[in-house]
Amino acid sequence: MIDLEKIDSNMAYKVKDIKLADEGRKQIELAEHEMPGMIELRKKYGKEQPLKGARITGSLHMTVQTAVLIETLTALGADVRWASCNIYSTQDEAAAAIATTGVPVFAWKGETLDEYWWCTAQALSFPGDKGPTIIVDDGGDATLMVTHGYEAEENPTILDRDAEAWDEQALIRKLKQILSYDKQKWHKAVKEIRGTSEETTTGVNRLYIRENDGSLLFPAINVNDSVTKSKFDNNYGNRESLIDGLKRATDIMIAGKSAVVCGFGGVGKGCAEGLNAFGAKVSVTETDPICALQASMEGFEVKTLEQLLPHGDIYVTATGNKEVITVEQMEKMKDKSIVCNIGHFDNEIQVEKLEERSDIKKRNIKPQVDEYIFPDGHSIILLAGGRLVNLGCATGHSSFVMSNSFANQVLAQIELWKNKHENKVYRLPKKLDEEVALAHLKHLNVSLTKLSQSQAEYIGVPQDGPHKPEHYRY
Image (cartoon, rainbow, N blue to C red):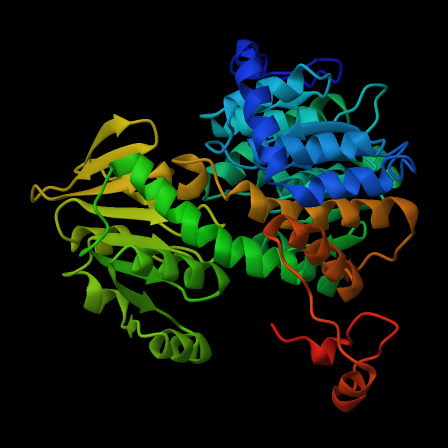
């Protein structure tokens, strides 16, 4: 048992089973082969040690692919501590493998919410009463903890609010505990934080809100909107990892089934493509007219969720919005309908209200697969407790797509550490986006066509540098 009341910055690690390290190391070695961007960055920057002296806290799914990211950061000189950003997403063998290298890891699959925030606080607490100098964030939870903690040190009454969401309640409990014995922890940390690099739409939205209202405490780099992140992770990653999660959880035959994808943004596009490729009859729900038009022109039926409830066999939320599927809507679904989420918010499905209904019986099928039986006898199958199905029920995106995504994270960390910035949200320049893409082309046996001088002049592309943004064709 761990003492959730206290933070111990000298604790070496807390993982499920350190004996899984050998298994994790073998998987990491396989992942490295599929992550050429990470290896290229180690070769390019290893001697320079651009992150020497940096203390990096990571709050990002502790998977095999993340292990390669962590070892890239340490290879470039950083002192790293890590926690997962999701209670179900940790691959325990990967966490054990990294822990044995001396990197403090606080993550295991199946954490409670109180354990989750304890792990996050542990990752943010370096020996010598220090905090991080840079944060690698996924969803913004590490940044959220620092920011809310900082604000609570100035006005403790903000922690007295009644929070509806269970995860927010757990965060408030943890911040109150810390405040009771250290009233300056977060102020001391913020003084040294050079910035945060954010992986996802959810976290980026949080950052832009704070930038706009003037409450952003340190600079941030929006990694999510780098083309080699958003286009690859959201589209190519999800179209494979959604299927992986569904198959591992239920062994369902997707061909012939009616699948409903809620949202046709970057994530929803990938999900719809993946389900369609496996023979599902795919329908889409949308609030945005442009996305709805795109879905229709791709051949997908676009209806409201209410119209689709009598027909759907599989429901996937991919919006980033709140309560996209309600308990009342689940009551109207077909018997044994599968319901899951792959958008980043953990509350796209009304799981807490589902749990609070005393007339609905819950039956666990296996880890992260639960059947909820309604009073009329029909049931729905909920995957990963409404959290990310591809990480809760599988192992997330493939290594190659995460190599693209994480290469952006490494470049963002170098930028934050080497250069000072105002408290604003920044994007990586297109030149670095191209650098990430180039690092992966050799792995795919790709040869680029070079424009002649006359061709370049005709379309206005400079010969001596990267393409200007208006000439990008993505």
